[in-house]
Structure formats: structure tokens, C-alpha cells
Length: 272
Image (tube, rainbow, N blue to C red):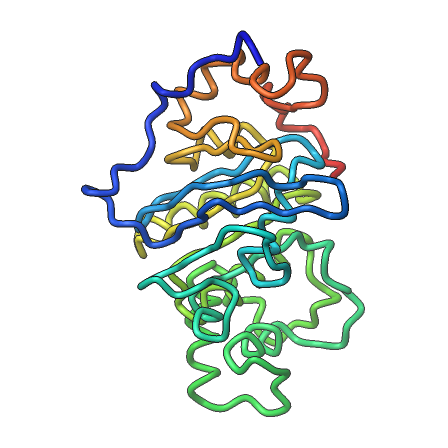
């Protein structure tokens, strides 16, 4: 396609100076004749906060499923840590996952501590051991959620639920944190508090993170690098490089028909 902006000037991580802790290499995925992911490759250094952006239907959810081991790629691989394939038993504790709060059945009869400890044990805890209790309490304290201990999941607000999901992800001390639009449907105050907590934890723990978001305010505040996905890697670089170049929208679609790369008003509600 002619007229594509050059991506050569965008700043990618330096492998020699920033050792890779997570890598997606040549990942391709089809559903029938539909090409969802086309030779997707990128890597994340230790402690880097990457925002993954792109329009609905661009393959973001499929990519996350492959990283988590819920789907298998038709080609390529995902590796974490010392060369181990992501999504396997060996790496199950290396990746922490925070879904949207609305992705969980809120009527499920469980308490906050049950949900967190279940991620430590790999199954539902009928009785919490002292070591598990200590780890869960520490994780909940890290996200400012001490007051939520003992509460039923059904009684939590969207923002509170996201703190619990974050504590659940952190309790295994992962090397990589994946967050799938974690503030979608959360009020402005809850969203701002969550993003601030997330950024502080990422910095203090040198924790690599992938945040899927449509909120450009979140990108500007948290991202050290941005990857724009539309079935393939359209752009990958520093926030200032991408947010300042609306022409990048035309790389895969000259009409830039459905992309939401413009800043989203802070009062806007997400419908994804």
C-alpha cells in the first residue's frame, strides 16, 4: 500500500541495554479464512509498561488469549522469563491477569480472600492456610484494599472489584502483568485511583505490564511504550511519538474508519 508513514523512526526497546523478559515472536492466528493476527512480534524489557491499543476487532483479545495459553497460535510463539513458553504450567505464576470487573459473575458466593487465595492454590480454597492468608493480606494491602478483607464479592463496587483482581494477580509475584481494559465501566475517581496504584506498583516492583485500553489519558499517564495493533503491529514506539502522529492511523486503513486514537473524554463511558 502506498503512502504509508515510515515506522523506522519509532523508538523500540534496545535488546542489548534492556534485557527482554517477555516476547511475542511471529504470532499468526486464523479462524477459518479470517486472519486475526498476522505475524505479530514485539518484546517487553523488565519493568516496562506497555499500552496495547487498537480498534475493536483488531485482534487484541485473541492476542491476550494466546499469551495466557487459552488459545494456540497457528504460527509463532510467546516466551516469558528464561525462554519458557508462556501459557504452560511452568509459567502459570509468571503472568498475572486482571480482567474487566464485569467479566466476573458477581453473584458467585465468595469472599475477597477466597478469590485471591484461589490464584495461589490453582483451585478454590475450602480452608485458607496461614501462609496463604499472609500472602493474600499483603497483596490486598499493596493495592490499598485492606478494608475489603472479608467482604462478599457481590457487595463490591466496580473500582473495589478491580483492586481485588489486581491483588489476585499480584499474589503469585508475577514477572508480567496483563490488564484487559481494567477500568472499563469504572467511575472516573475509581479509574484514576486504580491507574495510580498500578503505575506505582509497576515502578516499585520493576514489573513488566501490558495494559489494553481505549483511554488515551491512561496511555499518556502510564505508558512507557505504546503498541498499536490492527491484526498486525501497525506502530510500536514511545507515547509522544505515536500520540503526536495521527497519520499513523492511515497505515492499515486510509479511512481510519473506526479507530479511537483521538483522546477519549474523561467522562465518556466505554462500550466494548
